[in-house]
Length: 82
Length: 410
Image 1 (cartoon, rainbow over the protein chains, first blue to last red):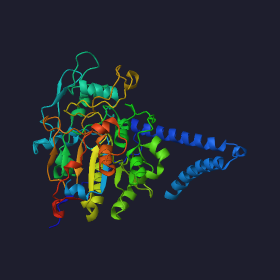
Image 2: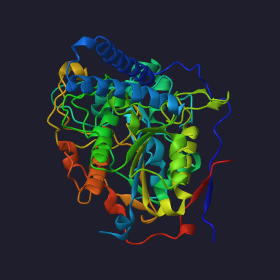
Image 3: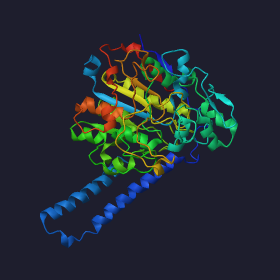
Image 4: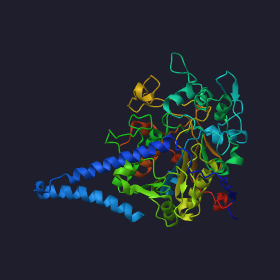
């Protein structure tokens, strides 16, 4: 015997309203996104401000490369998912 | 250990937005007396002193605009019916008063007492609640808004926050459940709807752990391809926006004033993705739960809970009094779904003190940690005290024809 099938009603026509004013939750989400981007920029700026001449040892270079790779990998990952 | 637990390989949590238990499922009490819903006689005073009874008049959209208050001071008033002061007791009498502060209209303030005809209006949620297990006592973790409550589902704490502010992780020893799983060699993912909707877990996880995120399309694909992680957390669509090909993507989170029916369709889609894969269906448990009540009436007084060792200041709460995280937030709908759960299971709450099992969102990471990590990972105080929900799985698996499917193409 097939399982019982429950019909799910359609959403009302006219429900779509992208011009609805954004509530506090969505405003907070946008603010949080901005905060995350600022931190991202800070991280990028910090890396770009590192003096290449100061990377003397393999440990210095590996630490820099690690941070740069992590940052670039994140960006590449996002691009690949598009 | 039950046969259901022996077979369990996946835990999936779908967290919706901002609806109270009574608003969504309260009407079920008329037909299912064990469900601690509404008798129809529950009431609140309005600002003119009139008694406003609950009414089965909830609509899918346009009735709760402006968005009911669900921030800490508003919820405090909803629970106690009066501002902080000596001798006050929790009585759930402040919902209409609080909504009047937003509507400025006495008649419209009564809308906060409206509830759905659950079986007629909400065929998906009510079917799942009556066909599997419904919790009479699942409460939001904090009497406050979304972000801090969702934090409890991810971390088992809100790190002392009671609001919508970006919460910075001050206690780096507390890892999210996803990080705990991955560090221990397990798999876990947060699936958000799509990029225009994205996630509410932004600053900490999206910023620092982007690899743990996927989209709903990936969830559907992972279900079909038997590549679902051991633990999955699903976020609905949070806003109306154009689709990639010019179509209309509707918010499915059910946050007022988004259309409740679209949320029903979303829940059905998530359920069907699991239900229609025979292998996955047998080894997966799905929890559908709401993050908080959204300012909408519920008749059950939130119980006290074990403090999590943090205190929100009087400034942070906005009530003039600090909060020690020693009381849960307002009750929300929560349904646990698996073929290993007997039809009509009702988990007792505060209405049955001798048998009550109280749950909150810290129960989610507590359950996942207990099951997949044998409880080995560091857990918060609230997780350590939280009830876990896998004990509802039994030895008896229901036949395939005994478990519903949804036709979402009507």
